[in-house]
Length: 159
Image 1 (cartoon, helix red, strand yellow):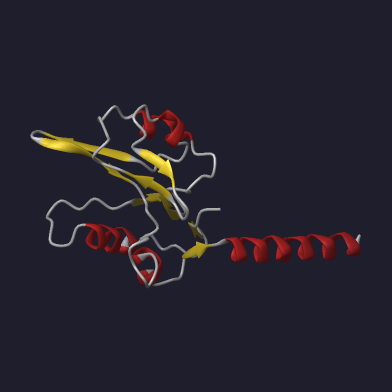
Image 2 (cartoon, rainbow, N blue to C red; image 1 turned 135 degrees about the vertical axis):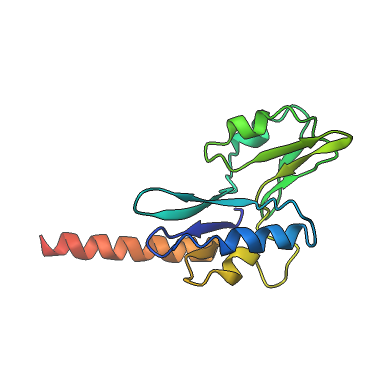
């Protein structure tokens, strides 16, 4: 299973600190900020949206040149293979992929890589002032599922 980041709309205050940390982590010193997640705001809530690192990823299947592949820890992007067709961006059900194209430059795939290069883990998780972001692993997912089963079982016992 891949690792992914989950966001809590209950805890997110919409400050966009995660976006800034992400952009600076991936492109320090660049004037054009390209975060790999985007804080979406509705009337009453806000929550960051990023790649879910799907195990059966439609973006990987949609890419005609294998610029996206399923790695051990995340969906991996290879800009050198990208032809800028946007098929992956269209196929992503979460709108979490952007293809940046500019004149005289090879297309770039902008999507969450769970900061696989950082020992400290994802920059967005580290800087979130309300702890609205958490990294989800196999163990954490199993523990959460077990907790939900116990909760539902106790509700059923009350009936």
